[in-house]
Length: 314
Length: 314
Image 1 (cartoon, each protein chain N blue to C red):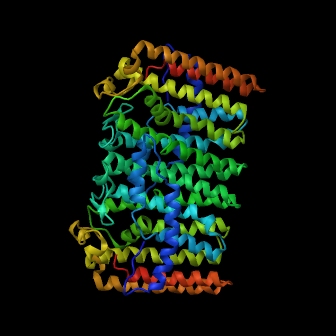
Image 2: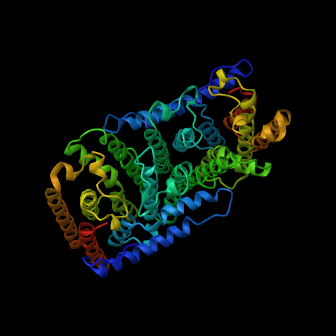
Image 3: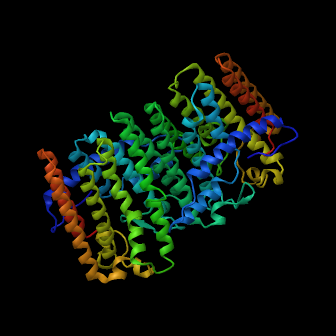
């Protein structure tokens, strides 16, 4: 959940937190504590899952659903499955064999709070349960084929051609300088895929995967996804450790290729601005296709979200 | 795939290998090599997935499907999804933070052949792709609800109340002596769940989850599943390292509670025999419900499989 910030529109933050709250409630209920011999796994899963992320991914799914006429109840399991996958990826990324990070969101990372074996298994368990939750989602929607397509899209975007593929390229990129083309390839997968798939599950369930609405929504998600990564790169240089909850300057220290190392900070900010403009135009185009006020409000929300992600300092 | 053994019925081994061959072909095609920036992940996945396991789990699914009147094509994606999950669990189990095994099936384990980060990601990728493959299975079957139920059952049995839960209890059990009740709890989850779910996916797709056939098939799978674990415990004491492809005596060395440490080797063999008898009775009961020769042959196959698992030396 997000605290107010002088720069940001307080009303928007409230709107965002309202949706995030319902996401948190769903996750808290669905990944409930169990009092059995393996209860430590539930503790570890809940420790990382309920650590207060921004919930951007589920929010993207829920607001896309609003635009496409899908109820929040119908999209929620898919939205939360994606958040569970996002969380598992953070747990595994933090492991000593990977990025070896002791802190995450200002708290001990999962393997430091528990131990390495528990963290590996908690990640595996969140990934596995994500698909159980997604299957429950497919079970309840009327459009079963759309529900199945949503499960498939989640697996694809989280897998070797999506997020995991991006992580593999990222590990390789730590050992050498990569080109702009390779960096874009990496971002499209490592962070892009899991920001794109929330829109996909909404269009799948709506049965509108190939429509004009889907096209604009995907354009929005892709643009915002890349902007998100560039903003992260900038924050790694200019951010405030107290606000970010993680050390800054780690990219440069590790000799990592980022948008900032490739283009410098000013040019990176220019690219970020252009991407945000592009995202806003996608919202405008989308709004023209909307009939109801609820749909138009969701488009407005997406515009504010793009600006929020641009201006955020954490 | 399995080599002939003087003790075993050669004809049965051939029948088993014939099904395993089709499983291997499906896996080889579906998890094909990709020539892209992240190709090392495909190499690692294929290294572990195509290392020549017995393919007991997919065979269980395919033969259950025969009895239930489901085509092999319809059950194959689910069968192979389960095998992919089995493989990922071996990769993660072998990691230094877990069992720290350098060898698996007579070859270097995944993290020794590649590195730890790649092994973690290859496991994650197999788990993720398993659900993509299962969703493809749900997409192609006519009974979409059954397909979705199969995905849900796979996730449940692989998760915190199934395989992962069992692994958590197993890690805990290494640090203390556990009771027979706890050992059975552990086995039912760690190895049992993934031997039970092949039957479940077949009954789900057939739309026969609550029938008498399903009941007998599940009884067979559960009994064979426990027998499988007890046989493993016995082989850890009496096995031949050259045939097993892994060191023996490791359970005792680690002070692990097993059926052998709890009951001794002779009593364990007696329990194993009784379980096998129980599995054979389930097959007899099942056979009485079968009409066609194909179904009856599949029941005969299950009987031979139970004997094979009893007598195996690896």
